[in-house]
Length: 140
Image 1 (cartoon, rainbow, N blue to C red):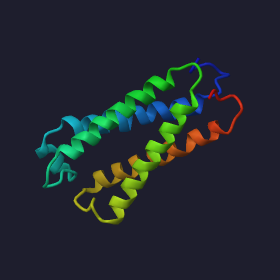
Image 2 (cartoon, rainbow, N blue to C red):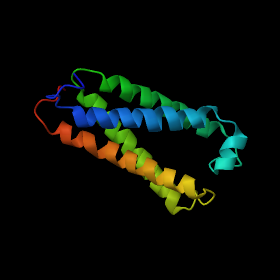
Image 3 (cartoon, rainbow, N blue to C red):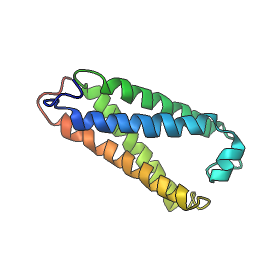
């Protein structure tokens, strides 16, 4: 149903898949499995313990899998949409606060562009489900 012409959730499914793949599996997997040297070269590894970052990577992978599975459902539930909106809004807030505190000062130009793209995808993924929550065809 996701590719039919009369799919009411086409835009939501597209954003769910993009977020699940790019932020969930790609970014979360990279944070989870890359060694400290690779993360330090990218400018994202702290000098302190690495386990909080690994935990965040594992949770991003879980969120990405949740979004990919929810995007395959015939009718996307409101619980999936609310969890998507809240998780991505919180991720965008964390990224914004870290940027304002200059915690990303070690990033190179490519890292800064990637950070902006991740932030924009989090914002889009936080706002898109709100449109579908207001409609009458959402199953609670």
